[in-house]
Image 1 (cartoon, rainbow, N blue to C red):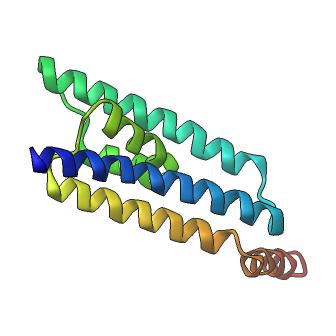
Image 2: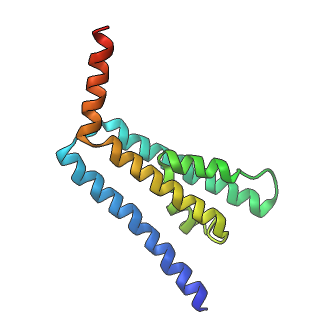
Image 3: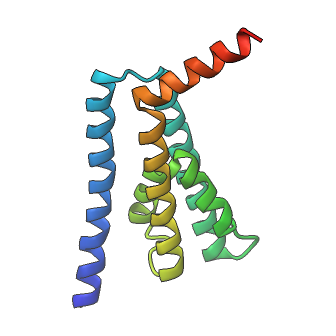
Length: 137
């Protein structure tokens, strides 16, 4: 019973990652506005990731070809991790296998780090400089 409670608490804690990211995204947007397509990318990939978890859960219960863990991790890495967290908790899927959980959280951290790096004014300056360099050739 203690293990079940601690897993539920950890699951609810996973939602905290989404909330913190959303707050950081919104605060960052005040100082360094991002194009709308960035938010849309996270929304679309999250919906896709949730759907893939649902398909995999159904196939796990009724047999059939499963969605590969590699595919689930890929969609989480490119921005679908908020949808994956919701799917893991709502569908109670992919929460037991420790190696998958570790790989999943690694992809979340990598995605957030890449997002943070790409959202800085320094990156914007680098892109502008690169465009200027190419246009003057």
